[in-house]
Image 1 (cartoon, rainbow, N blue to C red):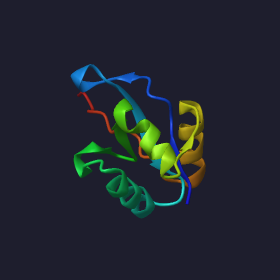
Image 2: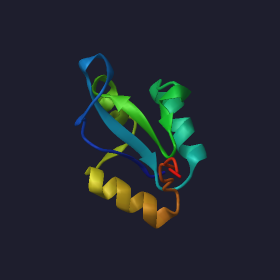
Image 3: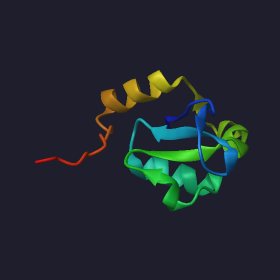
Image 4: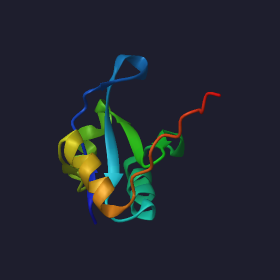
Length: 91
């Protein structure tokens, strides 16, 4: 299992800081870990879950490896699991 989480640094709803939770193995592994952590499916965004700072320590307790945001992006690319945001094409 390779579940990764970056430090809570991203401003989000309810005035909290948020982390990104990813797997560099599979989306199935990521979804299973998120369920164990108690993160709802609506927290999934393309290739990661947005996790509030209130759950960060619990994610690490459950086995997530804390890494930098840069490492998360690199590991997602290397694993082939990175899904880029699809923008609108202006004509």
